[in-house]
Length: 153
Figure 1 (cartoon, helix red, strand yellow):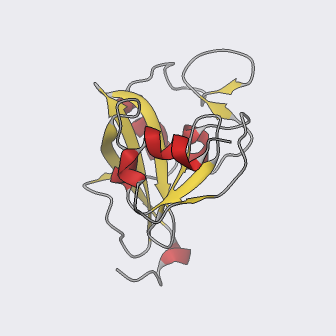
Figure 2 (cartoon, rainbow, N blue to C red):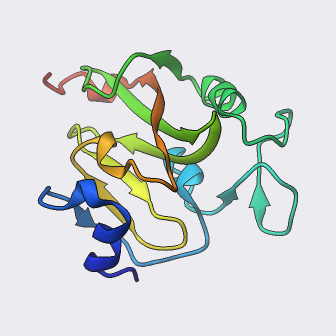
């Protein structure tokens, strides 16, 4: 498991914030799978044993392809990471419009991320994971969740 020091070294914007480790390390799933709440597959746009990518979508790490996949799962593009009553959001992190990470917003308004083969964490803001490896949260999508209607904004 990545130590607190290692996590904070990789993600300096987490220092001094309220974040928490939520799982043990695993290589069963990655951040993209985690954003889709799939804990059984490693999603990445390349063929290989143990790697999943939805049928009908190009094997490309282009942000546009991932956006199309999220749209197929009921998401639509939105402008920001702010909490919206009745909506679940995801953030796509990229460098030069190439996928580097994805995170999902929880009902509480906090964000959840899977750190590669390491642990899952909850963090206050999507921006707290900006770094030279993940880039920044460049695209946001949302989908309606009737069971989240009571979330206050």
